[in-house]
Image (cartoon, rainbow, N blue to C red):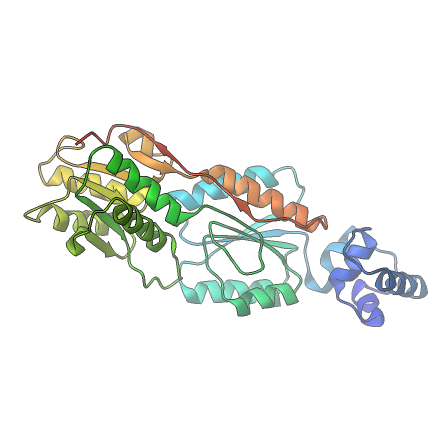
Length: 330
């Protein structure tokens, strides 16, 4: 009995092309389509659901690749993905990559094992070589919270977000503004904190204000690290009147450190975060909101469109400041 692999080999095309012909999708040249149909007829190939989905080890599943399941922002995006895919009838698999080694192992399994029909990448930067491997394996890919060359993405402008947060503090009368963020040298290549710091510096420069180097504190991602970095800021003789934390997780560490220092928010120091995660309202954190849940839904919808043979464009998302109780006028 002929298989989809036999048809692909005989027609000199990939199994993805055969699949698109079988399902009547566009993006197949007319002469290629005719050639594939002739081979199907000659080999008396009769596709069924399992043959369509399991050709060359391929499944109908959608794989979601994420870092750090403990991250509130990643989990919010993942909830949006699950919600959007709930009625798709496709199996959803999850791969977690907390290190470069785990990321590379996950990609190797995706392109070399039972290849999923589609891949959603949340927040993880991928090299051009890796993207080429996914393309060669005909794994349709969409990125959320990270821009990947040649891959449809759902993202926010982190530089603009950093400017938005800083300008909000400037508009409230603050001039001595500190920054707490992640190291530039991230093993997985994350750039969001660095880009938000660039926005912070641009806003300060646009306002004609200089930034004291000691007002900028960075370290490995984590609330405990943010606690320590904030302690350093608060120990300065001329301490800042406000702190912009590059994520809400870091902002929580900032708030804890201010309290441990015997100071009050916002009376002694104002704090603004970034993300507006689920916990932010409960602690009254003023934060730059990015639509986390919605980004997951939009990314999943884009991937389903790709799998249906429809081209999709990048989706830029807007940012807004959500005012709560951690920022006061100066």
